[in-house]
Length: 55
Image 1 (cartoon, rainbow, N blue to C red):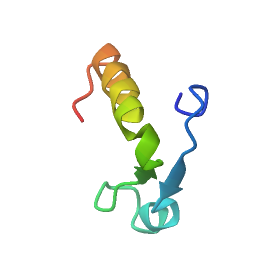
Image 2 (cartoon, rainbow, N blue to C red):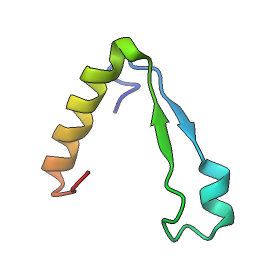
Image 3 (cartoon, rainbow, N blue to C red):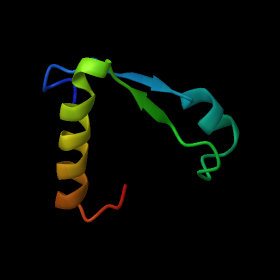
């Protein structure tokens, strides 16, 4: 979704999350450029609301 909006994203902790068994102890983190931060948050908030997810 962020990539489709033209926002470059770096996903951190993917391997750590997999190693610990994906129980949520080490969540994945998304990194975006500071210039894209407000728009990325807005998009993620809207997507979460559409799916009844609390961020």
